[in-house]
Length: 163
Image (tube, rainbow, N blue to C red; front, side, top):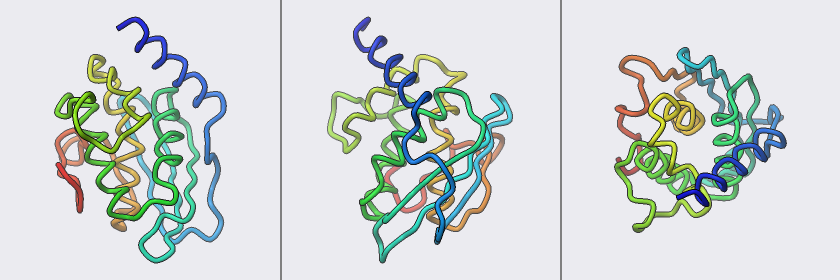
C-alpha cells in the first residue's frame, strides 16, 4: 500500500510540474470547459478528430495537482485512440475513481490505475474525474460541464460508454 501511495504521489507531482499536451490545440474540431466549484478547478479541453480517431488533444486552465495530472495522463491515453475507446476509458476511469471498478480486474486503463487510490479521498474524486467529464462533453458537443448538482460526473451516466 505504501508503494502504491508513493507511486501515486510521484506521478501526480511529475504530471503537475510537466503536464503532457498542455495548451490550446489549433484547428480543434471539438472543445469543452470543465469547472469544479468546490476546488476551483477550471480546465479547457480542445481536441481534433480525424474520422472517429482522436488525432490531437490539448488542455489548459487553472487546476489542482490531481486534476492537472489526471488531464495530462488522460490526454496521453486517448490520443490516437478511437472515439469509442476514449468514451470507454471515461467510464472505466470514473468507475475506478468511485470504487465501482476493481483496478485488479479487467479494464483498459493501463497506467491510469495509479489513480485508483483517489477513491479513498472523497473530496478529491471530482478533481480526478473533471478532465474525463470534460472530454466526454467535448466528444458529445457538450460545451461546458460542472461537477455539481445534476451534472455531477460521479452520478451522471457516461454517454456512449460503459457505466
